[in-house]
Image (cartoon, rainbow, N blue to C red):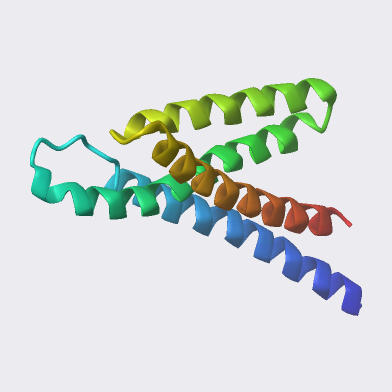
Amino acid sequence: MKADNQKEYVIYLYRGWIFASALVSFIICYRFYPILMENIENIVTADHKLIVFLPCYFILTYLFVHGIYRVTGVTVLVHYISAFIVTISFVYSLTYMDYPLLVRLTASFYGLVIGFAHFLFTTFLYNHKKA
């Protein structure tokens, strides 16, 4: 009986994690969507917005990838499609910033790593939910 309660707990934890992370990430992406500003005084605000925006953007991307894995199952074709989606998201994230290429790559990679860590934890919860 104890194993059933633990599995039920993981199911609720997984569903809550997906819902909460999708909701919070969507709200933050909506609220902090970078708009190119003409006023140079707002450049510091734009940097802080990007630091918050990019990880949430990649979390949403990886939640979409996780949904693809859940619906279709894990196959080689799904791996290619997921890699394509993440690559397109990464390249698109480089357009949010009006900085030198090295700064844009570093900021986007930072968001990509946080999004991937979120994906790994989500996949960990999903696999324990199934077991």
